[in-house]
Image 1 (spheres, one colour):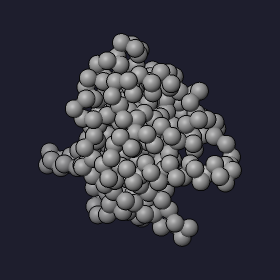
Image 2 (cartoon, helix red, strand yellow):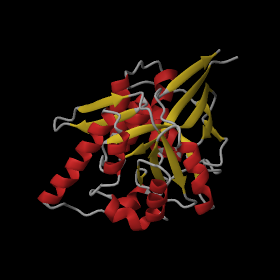
Image 3 (cartoon, helix red, strand yellow):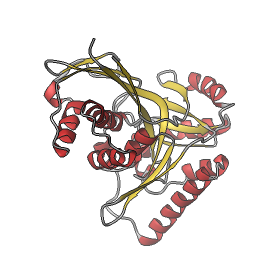
Image 4 (cartoon, helix red, strand yellow):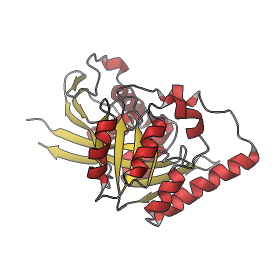
Length: 300
C-alpha cells in the first residue's frame, strides 16, 4: 500500500470589521485533502461545496502546487487528490486561501521541503495577495499580519481565544474582486486616522480577551463595511437581531456575503436557534475558533 498524506486546513474569517486585510481568525470549518502519489494527476471532490466539473490544469490546488515546486526547484510527482470541504465557495470564509495553503502543504510533504511556519505564511500570503486568511489557515487562532517596505512579512499569532462565532451564510456568492470594486480609491487623512484607530482598539481588545469591547469595534469599521453593506443581504437585520440576542458584535466575514457574530461560547447555540426563524434560507451555524492550523497525518 502506498503512503497517504491527509492534510487538514481550517477555513477563516478576515477583517473582523476594521482589521482590513490584516486580521485573520481560523475557524472550525475545514478543507481536507487525502493525497497519494499516482501515475497521473486526478482530483476527486467529495463535497457539495466543491465544483462538480474538474479540469486538472485549472484546479487551484494543482496550479499553486506547480508554482511552489518550481519556486523550490523540485520535481513534483503526479498525485491522486481526494478533497472534502466544509467551506462554501465565494462566501467570505477563506475557501481560496485554504486551498492555497493546502497546495503548499501538499508539496511540502510529498517533496519533503521541510518548510517552516513562516515559510508557509510567506508563500500563501504572496499568492493570496494579503496575509489575513492565509496566515490564519496556516497557524490557527488569531493572526495579525503586515509586510514591511523591505518585503518582510511579520505575523503575530494569538491562540486560546475564549469565544465563538455564529456564521450567517446566504445562498448567494460574492467574488472578492467584485466586493473590492465598491471601495474608494483613497481616504481623506482624518478619516483614515479614525479608521486605523478603530483597528488598533479591535486588535488590543482581542489580545486582552475583552470581547465586549472587541464587538463594539467590529461594528465601527470605516475602511470597507460602509461601502460594501449594500452588497450584503440582510446586513442591518443581522446586526440588529444578533445584538438583541446577546452577540458582542457583528461584521462582514472577509469580503462577504457571509456575516459573522462574535458570541460568548456558552450563548452561541442559543443565538443560532433564535436567529434561524428570521433567516430560513440561510445556513446558520455555531463555529469554534481553530487553534491548530494545518494538520497532517501519514499512513503507510
